[in-house]
Image 1 (cartoon, rainbow, N blue to C red):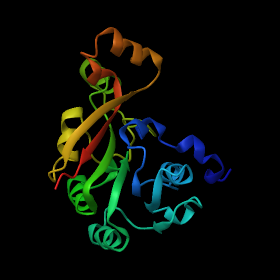
Image 2 (image 1 turned 120 degrees about the horizontal axis):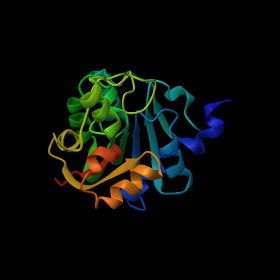
Image 3 (image 1 turned 90 degrees about the vertical axis):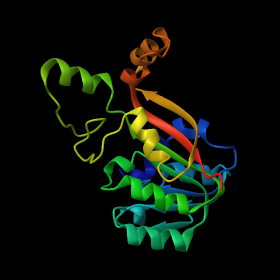
Image 4 (image 1 turned 30 degrees about the horizontal axis):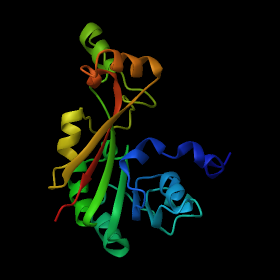
Length: 212
């Protein structure tokens, strides 16, 4: 089945609480076919949607501009940002951990933001119990086809190092939240008064803003 036929299942609605009602010009950086930015465009929350991804040629119809490029090629990314920016909102959802130098990428995205613009970042949490427990108890760290231990991940982040990444260029942290895998982990987090959230969260989400 064409992925475009099921794109509604790919929309990252979990990050919507971090977004303003109107996101203006939005860049979906590493957004696949652009499911999330397409939804924002179709529902009138985005004035313009731009997609950067190696498979951007498969973009959904609501995307206004596509740039099919290697996101690790910083010169190509910088040139594409100059052509298509500036942006009010940039989405970098579970992509930075796949890049060789995500810190340099954040710096490029910072430059493409308008003053007052927001960068929304989501990364897997390597401090998750599913990673920590086997490592501590059995000395095992096994890559998998998906999830926190996805074998295509090049970088690993905890909540603190994820915040350090998102703010490395001077962007100001405004909000953080977490995603959980299943009700059991969500309830366990609430039952422990969120004191051990770093062990239950599978993803860390952040909103950082350009203040100057």
